[in-house]
Amino acid sequence: MSASQTILVTGGAGYIGSVVTRDLLSRGYQVVAADALLFGGESLLDLLSLPAFTFSKTDITDADQVEKLFARHRFDAVVHLASIVGDPACKAQPELAERTIWDGSKKLFELCERHGVRGFIFASTCSNYGKMDEKQILNEEAPLRPVSLYAELKVKFERYLLDRSTSVDFTVLRFATVYGLSLRPRFDLTINEFVRDALLKGELEIYGPQFWRPYCHVSDVARAVLLVLETPSDRVSGRTFNVGSNDENYQKQMIADEIGRQMPVKVINVEKAEDPRDYRVNFDRIKALGFEPRMRLADGIREIAGGVGNGLIADPYAARYRNS
Ligand SMILES: NC(=O)c1ccc[n+]([C@@H]2O[C@H](COP(=O)([O-])OP(=O)(O)OC[C@H]3O[C@@H](n4cnc5c(N)ncnc54)[C@H](O)[C@@H]3O)[C@@H](O)[C@H]2O)c1
Image 1: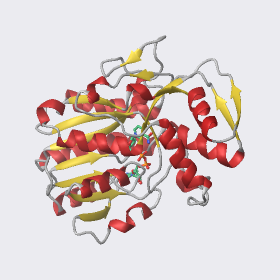
Image 2: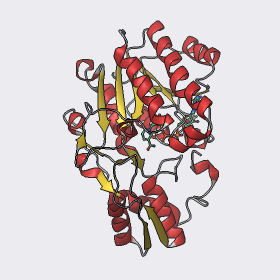
Image 3: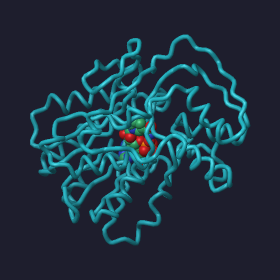
């Protein structure tokens, strides 16, 4: 892709989408952000005066709305972020989750094929791996063991793409768990939640401090999306990439330790024998494209503490900052 092309960002008002949208605009792309605004649209307000930016209130579960969107614009590529996001949100609304992640994504992709869209990026998740075998570090070829409806639906749509004979250059990105601030902050994600609680309650209750997971800052996830969009298609088309860094696999205890280096906090460990989402991930494949995160855990903690501690985010416990 090159600048002056038009990119559709579904879920463009969201935690990650609001950053991706800005990054694309600053690179000179025309951007259409489409979102059903489940958590409001304040994250996009400052962009409305830009000629290169268009917002469309579109629900991807409504086929008519999506067809109208494609009739109004000619897209060179689609960054598909719209989703019911996370295990608890999908568990709470299983039918909506399926209509969004499975039916909505399929309809969107078929329209991309029909309208000759060249590139399609699907936001998937490292949660697809589920629990790892002892000491194993999972790369993109590792077996997928989804342990939630959320991951099952992401895996189902990944397989649909990978099994399809299609003219669209699609890429699957499996994001690590994201941290850091955007204009639609989320405080239902481990690191963000821990920093908020450490600051405002002075204590952290950690369930299963020994369990591993990979993490990545929201600005780096957005940079990975841009990198893939701008990499020649023969290197990314039809491929799956984990998005994160080998150095950012952490046990929950390691996150609490780093928080403790930046602020006083009492940590209460609650032992759990089993966590179905205990995994460490290998990120060599995206690194080979030239991707290296710029932000690290310590930077993210400082950033979140700055937003919460100084009252810039007045009520980080508000419902709009969590997905379920
Ligand atoms: N945040 C993470 O840790 C993480 C990790 C792995 C993967 N992901 C994936 O990244 C993507 C973005 O996640 P996020 O953290 O920004 O979540 P988010 O909830 O902030 O963003 C999702 C956006 O999609 C919109 N949306 C939901 N249903 C819609 C529909 N039917 N039509 C149109 N828009 C709709 C919501 O209004 C929201 O703005 C998702 O696909 C998610 O599965 C996120």
